[in-house]
Image (cartoon, rainbow, N blue to C red; front, side):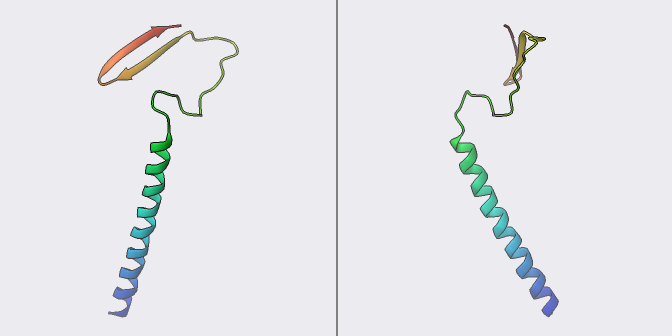
Length: 65
């Protein structure tokens, strides 16, 4: 019985931690500017590719650069 109570307390603490982390993620996502690219874009110094393919709402959009 005591082990069961300890396990339940551990589960409750884990759920609370997940709730806090989810809240932090929501705040971070809400602060991102809509319509901008994320920070993991890379500069293309050799200009090997001059086209961008974007998939939006089940439609492919092709833009030549």
